[in-house]
Image (tube, rainbow, N blue to C red; front, top):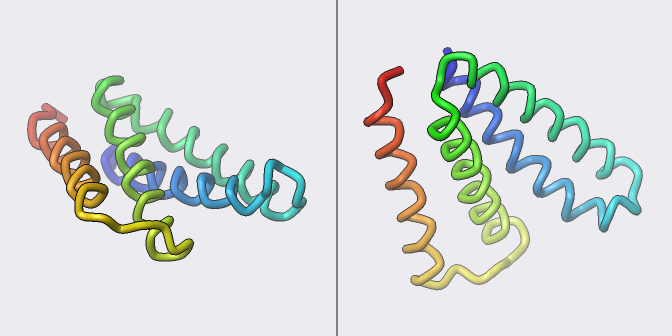
Length: 106
């Protein structure tokens, strides 16, 4: 269950990162509200996952999901560059996340 909570927390991190972009520096009300709500949800679920997962593993996986998710969101939804070097770099992050999961005792 803690891994599932961590996955959802990571996806919420992607959501609040996207919301942060759309809030235009917290100058737009509803994107700002969305950003704050999803950020709070992400932090709460991360804290719940950390009850059973090691700090380093949970935090690295959470930020990794957020980083790769935001990267994919930027390419798909915002037309950001999708060069081979950028994709390979994101793939390395994913490999690191898989390694952390496989080497975790929980």
